[in-house]
Image (cartoon, rainbow over all chains, first blue to last red; front, top):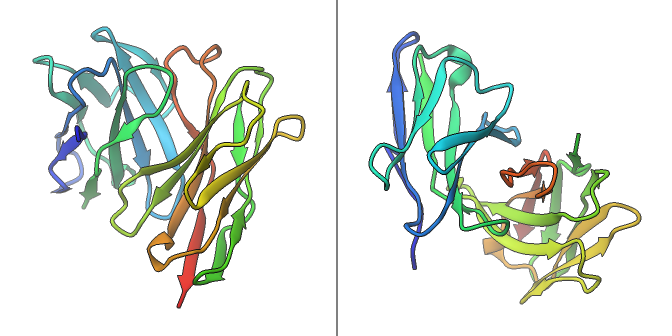
Length: 112
Length: 117
């Protein structure tokens, strides 16, 4: 069964460093998403991506964040200069349309 | 703006019994989708069940069923014959295609369910 994959599973970084979180969505899906979950809190929408451009972003998704689909399979989230409050679980999701979103296993980001 | 509220932070149930998790939402949309996702300790997000607002019939998936009350904007999840593997955090989520042409999900705060042996 096809699935969304994410790497790495856990990333530890120093404050101010750049990180890139990687996702491989399901191959025939068209819409891609990043969500964030701070430990013990709800899952929050960050950004959606369709047709090689951002279609919507939340207030959390400021200039420090960017997304890219560089090669037609990978979907990346970059944080340019990490802050302590960026520590969270980051989930990638994909869907064919307005129905079930398939989530990856998540990347736990720890900023020290 | 749409909001999703889960008023039960924690619940517990004895194995083999039935439990109901509550969810309410607020929207002015008439066409939307509602979901329940399960997040076990591994933190993977797993879809449990989906309901389309235009469907009057409540969705059912094996031991999982929903009570969808559109007028009341209520979407509860019933788990029958609870199993130890049902222990997880459960999130209610909302998606309105028209107001958000990207189909983003809006999540509630979650309910932690513990199934006791």
